[in-house]
Image 1 (cartoon, rainbow, N blue to C red):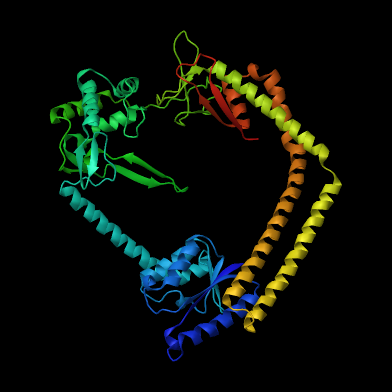
Image 2: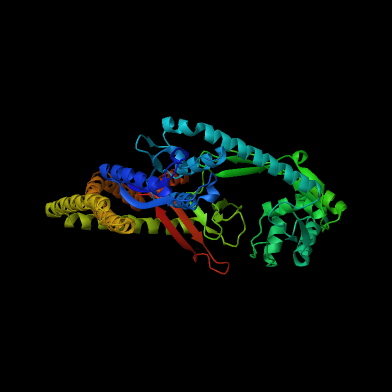
Length: 501
């Protein structure tokens, strides 16, 4: 276990000098490290006094190294040596150790803050930290609302048509002309969201990110954004966190938005904006999910190579079905049957390659190789035992005064690195042994599945319905990435197929 020793004088030791206290504690903790076979990577001696973390440079240094996962544990005489300032700073220290899974070890007890029992020790500190965080958030929210009432634009990013300057917006004339064009097409020429997006793409007009990809969602958000009539708005979205940690959001109803007069100039006349809102409501068609029979064997498997969206099926009377990117990002569509044919060719070649590689490696495996691996593991284990004996002697040399702190730490780091290297060698050798076992598993499980898949693809695949073909392909394909240039012919497209075998 890699540890750092943190030394700090307590108030109970006022009658002793800092040097005496730290020297005595160092001797105790080094003896404890030797007894438990710890790798001491550093010894931090806090010689300055101070309750606040900001006045303790060694503690700041230690917290940074804990966040870098440098240590498995920190060794101290008592828990209160880490922090005896206010509850917030104590909570910060303990939360850092908990978040980065670093134990706190004292001669009397080991604290694992990820353990439920040990975590009870820091419940009060954590409660105080959370309480203070809530207060800070409320203050920030009040500050935001006050700033909004004053007409400031409080979002960090300027909307299309504006640049952010200080706490407000200034019109970007080049972009503002495009905003006026969008509202004109939408209100006066009968264009919908999708048609406006395609018009802008055809005219090679750049968006805020500097590319020419526009979609209907972006247009709809611009049409509904009151910033274009000189307003500032907040509370437009509600955010939720999934168990995985991913954040999702959706728009609130407009009556929940907080809107105030902004300091910035309007780009769109209010009458035009209001007409656009009426048209937006009239043109909105809610999605109705209807269960349909699958007609695309590649459904939910193909991703757009340009924007990453899932490719969808386009049908037209009297024409073959094709795949397309619904985001209109410029990735040209192709007939499904051509893409499917290419996919089958790729996965057949890949399955046969996997089968060939396995059979070739299998022929090279013999019992001698297994014995060599086991012998190498035994040799590395003996080397580790020798290094551990050398490490024990370091403590004796330090105690006898033959080694100073720096020499001790340098030698300890050298031996620890050699032990780590030997352990890595053992892990690598164990992985090679595991690979041999995995090959046996392949032989008894995966290879029959590969053989059956090859048989089906070569003989009976096209006898299946589109839905059954789709189910089969999902058992062997993880993802297909599709890309096609605008000027490419019908058979000129590229595919990248990732298998899940």
